[in-house]
Image (cartoon, rainbow, N blue to C red; front, top):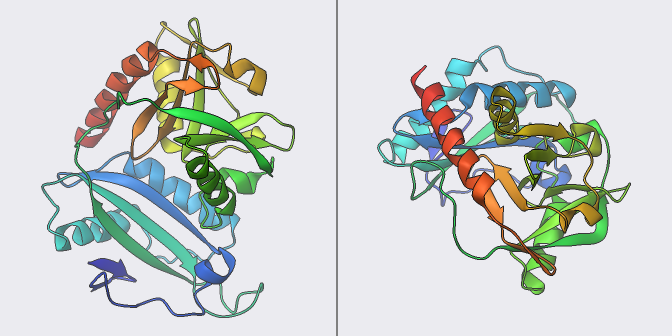
Length: 284
């Protein structure tokens, strides 16, 4: 079952028309998050990022679009899919209502909630080999729109096709200054000694939720030093570890980039702390 503007429909029923603006113009934003036993991981952060994105894109935010309302709608959709007691992947997409060309007929919005099954309740590190390569055919822009999770992700799509065609598990995207910004499906962190580095938002990376949580974890301790700074392609092969973060997988360890292989000691350490933070916020 999917939830379209508060009404539940079977997944195989057509509900979006040919004039849908997310389809025609990429005029939408979305959030993906974990739902486990009636709890949405880091829900407040997802909600406030969604509101900020909608305001930036001049979407009209309904008065009913409260934190509590959307949480209830998501959990109702999870329940309708008989997954209240099982881990689920949730996608909440918001888009302007149908009509218009580049100029919309209205700034009013619709929303769609989808639920998919997941196996693990908490984040796990996958021990399988995971090789990445730079994607250099097209570049990310260094602007605020690149920080948003919009439905316009054609760069990520063509980079995914490139990775599949060339036998890579992922690609690292670079900006117009030729700095490494993020992976296809998440933010990038590098580790050298006790310094953990991640690109700043000014470089064009996604304003990721798990990125934010991991930065909070690193800054709250004394074991590691966090550096929010540009990463050059040259630095990748000098790093001790590279890993990717997103709201579904948590931390994805990179095992190989070109001729360099990487450890995952720090990534494993941080994953345990990330799970602890998710549990703590779920019970607070």
